[in-house]
Image 1: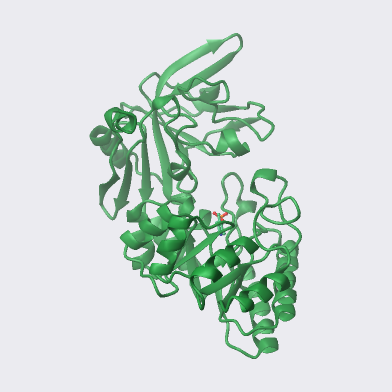
Image 2: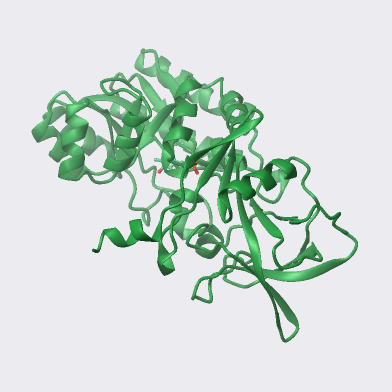
Length: 414
Ligand SMILES: *Cc1c(COP(=O)(O)O)cnc(C)c1O
């Protein structure tokens, strides 16, 4: 596979060079304007809830809050982030979604009266004993999932997520005097609208079979973005139409008003993010060329973990004009002491090459569409410190996370 890199015209090279000058590389850069645009695209839904695990920086959460978006938390750390960003307890602002609840998380959830989206029977027992009348949702496993990637499939008998037998769960919810307020399905049909209808049908069936008046249904996340191909772009109008119809059906059957919620992570932030790195080595290995960057899968793990494709473009260090008719065919990798540290790899771990204009050591490569599951999945592997995050707002930019120091990393052990 060869992918020719054409110049992407939506990046402001001058501004990025300024950011590099001030904050060095590697660096994450987010564009606030793009996040706001994506939020607006979902305005038909009654509630948009950001799955913050996609990008949990407090400043990104603040943008969400300011634009009317609520938030999902999957850990105590994410609850603390949400509270810090200004989201309130005892409301629908934050929902805790998980298949387990640890003691310290339970304490916080009770103290702040944060509704819980239940993913296991054991959670019901735990919360029921400690906090009767607590507001809960049921996360339904409809018995089937979606997608070919085992690592991201969220339904069916091979999925650890959600409640298999919702009637049994509801019985227990009643027994413990908990308050069921919503039903949730997170399968992620992507752009497969026939599959989406199947998901909606499952939601209707579950709601009718539980037969309890609820205030919310959630369509979960899983809205795709066009990483590579425009066909991956989800049609929000159709997506809404299908879900809205199901909501109305459930509302009529149960004879109550129901708010329709959507819970995207990727959709809201992926396209806003860039990972900017420097070319440190151009290595000739037999008939191949490896470009080695100063960032690796400790920063962006998606290609290594899922074989995910990310568009890569070149930013010359010296303002020279790139010649797109004179290209080199390269494999792009990082600095880590691990052979899987390659950005240009497919799901089966096979490497592919991309064609880029002739580059020199010191030029920059930009990895695109990394605002979701980029920084939030990064690690200290190979003892490399976490890198800074910069937010572009209107005409200026601010640092929203500074670079970790090596001393800070070591301090946990000293
Ligand atoms: C991860 C997750 C999401 C968001 O998924 P995206 O694919 O990023 O939209 C939504 N809901 C739940 C429960 C999740 O775990």
